[in-house]
Length: 213
Image 1: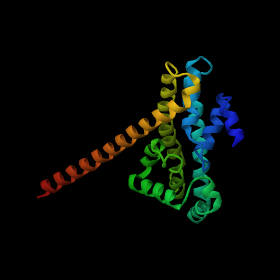
Image 2: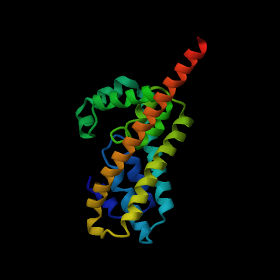
Image 3: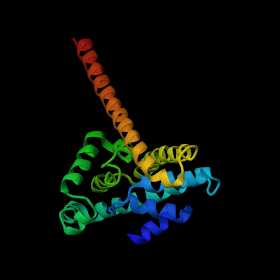
Image 4: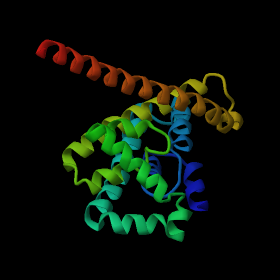
C-alpha cells in the first residue's frame, strides 16, 4: 500500500493508468484520490487534463477487463468463493456486494455496464456480472469506456475547478467534501432516469391496451 501512496505523490500518465487499473479491479482504491489531484496538477500546468482523462479511462478499461475475464472464465462459484474468503474481505468485497451488482445488471441489462460505472459501490464490481453473463466483449468495452470516461471527466472537472481556490494542503479534504455532493447528484439523476423510463413504459403499455380494446 505504501507503494500506491508513493505513486500518488508522483502522478504522471503512467501512474494514473496503473492506479486506475487497480481501482477498477478488486483492490479497494478510490478513483477520487487519483483523477482530481492529477487534474489539479494539470490546472497548474504540470499535466494535460485531456490526457489525464484519457489515461484514467484506459486504466479503468484494463481493470474492468480483468474482472470481466476472471468472471467469464472462472464462473460464479469461484467469484463467490473469493468474495467470502479472507482475501475478499481484505479487498472490501463480499457476497452481498456481488449479488447487488448482479441484480443491477439483471434489472438494467447491458446498459448497466455504462450506468454502473458512475454509481458508488457498483462501479468497480459491475464488470463481474457482465463477465458472468458472457456479455459481448466489444460491447462491454464500449459501454465501460463511455461510463468510465464520463466519471473521469466529472472528477477531472472537479480537480481543475478546485485548483482556482483551494491550496494543495487542503485539497484532500475538499475532494472528499465535493465527492459526496457529486455522488448524491449522480444517484439522484440515475434514479430519476430509471423512474422516467419505467413511467414511460407503463404509459406506452396502457396506450397499447386502450388501442387494443
